[in-house]
Length: 303
Image 1 (tube, rainbow, N blue to C red):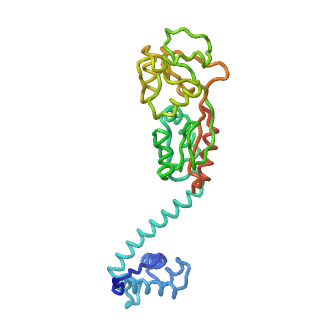
Image 2 (image 1 turned 30 degrees about the horizontal axis):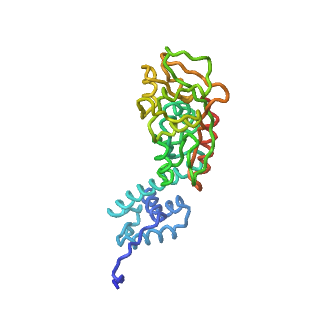
């Protein structure tokens, strides 16, 4: 077996010892430094002596009867100790600040069919209500987001349901209707039934986007194999294809504000197809208080 007898264990100075030395450097007096540190002079003197023993170097010139001074190395240690104490104070201040709701860093995932249409409505209000919140946003597909939540790379996410989120806490935010988007030269009544949707003419997002499944499921449709297949990676691409007469598509309500004038939006008659928007986070998250606060804040923002 290897011998551990010769391993040197480093003994670190204590924060309090650094406080004593910095106070002495500032006050040039043991008695005044002790008052600043709210200890007796003997306690402060003993603490600095212990610091000297730990470092193996003299820090204070004790020979003179005038004002106390530090050795050259003592001044160097005092300067470094001041930096250490400032760093510690910053850490404590950050921790204290985080006791307020929604302070510090929070990593939020959002799927692409929500992020560009929903975030511009909620971010200004969140920034105004929680100025200490450092919201880091990540846009990705639902599968990737759930994987990042499970690995604790994300703290929470806004996604569309239904979606399998085993091991997650899920809260509903709102439902939104689907609209049929079609070129303006097509003739449609004021509203249509889901049975009137022509699956042969329907453009969809590519596999992997949950909106594809939600749109098909909400309208009880299956992708048709009768026409040339086309699938897009983004809703903006689908919208442009519809505008150029390539077909129709289904758009959730939050997207409709970005639709150009050469596309008509046809509502569905009741019961209209919908998708559910919600927020999820890992069960047992240590940020539960902040996440519930974020949930309430987002719910109260009108879009």
